[in-house]
Length: 328
Image (tube, rainbow, N blue to C red):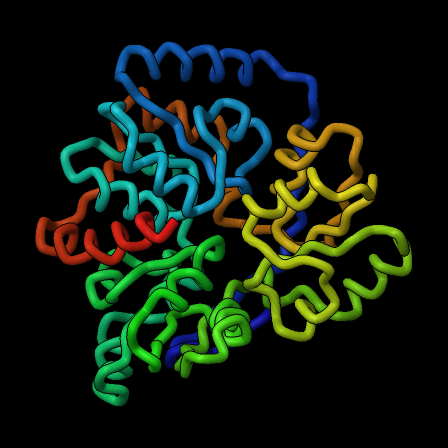
């Protein structure tokens, strides 16, 4: 059990091993996949899944991507129902962008720990201490927090978002590691950081990376910017999960070390056949792994777990989310 204090709240994270599902589909899996496809047509539904989801969930999705890609897809879909396979803030973002659509959360208990590390009141306090500073919020934040932001960002476009701002002073919440990375890329800005973090990226260690480099000396290291600075210093390239795919395709190496959640392995192997990807041990998002095919099927059958946000929250959160999408 690992405990860390952030924003005055205590978050404990259990290290968990993710058991990879066998390739052979059993009868229940085949039934679930077939029924999900039927319900997509019946409901005019689209299934969106994050790169960290289980392989079988990714395979049934209409689109798999990172937070930015999923937000863009949600903003452009003509489906009546959006089934979101990801953590809660992602489904909330889809609802903010589509207030008239039905958004179903595949697993309502799949909370992002980092998103809970900052509250609207804490953002208000930061703004009071730094008047004139613009507030950039990582999309990994609650809908309530988004109402306090000037603009949202993802790991894919955080540097571009911060660089585009007029203010020299920028409050960046909630991820301290991504914030430090952005600050290093935007030296002209005074980036004011909060102390939130992603547990699974936070616990990737220098020792783990060094061990992987010793085992695969010719393999480049691609790291997610949510990793700690000392880990990023060992990387050959840094990028979001979506950018990792492009970097891997361009790499001449057949062996690549990936410093992010293990769910990325499935999509990387599909997109980069013949290449071998190596991950640090125990880098598992337990919230994402709560979602399975039966979760998806159940919410579609029952039209349950509908994301509900009040009109004021959606209206106030829409502007910073839309600015994030437009900064592309």
